[in-house]
Length: 398
Image (cartoon, rainbow, N blue to C red; front, side, top):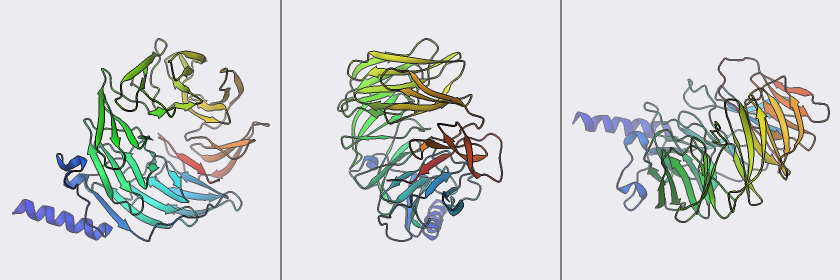
């Protein structure tokens, strides 16, 4: 009787907090054999119907390292709106945001996910994975959106698909290990994700498990595709090429000695795989043929670890642990530009135009000018804290 009363009280609190009862798994869905517990269920609340929103291209969105998401108008140099998680103590960014049809989808570390109007900051809907007492942590996630769903993995060891229109649960699957901090990959109407030593593919619409591959070492890299095959790295020093249907290993590439940790530093372009590996003395960026796994070129960085890379206009841009900004030609690996920054990036890089880019430091939003190498403080933060984990920025543009 006491146990039933506790469950009843939790459901009452969930209804009062979000306005709808927790979503449950239905027979025949992935979790019919492994039903989500009360703490795992998704609670959603619709504030207003979701709609496509025009883009305000004067804005840059800043997901600050204190856990707040706000818009900054580059023309007026004013903060427009701010959105925070429900829990006041959630003071960490830890994730990235996705902008889709003018709606900003933001996951918070406490397990909440909001859909927000890019112009006004008004919230369309809120969802919470789990509950406010036993929180499900979302870490290093970027919402993946396709086919009317939002896909995300969590630290409780589950992959979730939420309905984009209202944030309700479409399906979920309990994986074999916890602490999943790598975003999923959507390709060929499938969802690919990792968990411990396993790599999985699911039907993106139903969540049905299609294939599962086990490895000797834990898989801890972002999955990418060249629109033909899938590429994934383990937590040590091997990159694998997998077939998308059965996850058969097509080839594997071993990093140089004492290099490891590709993680999210990987992308595909024109049937090549580009990735960065770290090491105690040398870190490197590799270019590998996606068909054969043959190395095309390699660029070494001595006594400095590569923290971040991205592809822009047939170049690799990135920065190192010692705050060196660099540009590398995709075709030959030659360094086209580099600069020693006086402000250390803690975010992604966002291009304003051909002449400059933005990044967030622990003190300010910086606009870096390529010609002059000036680091202009666009928005100066009023407070700084120690042990900054990360931040994320998004320049709104077509």
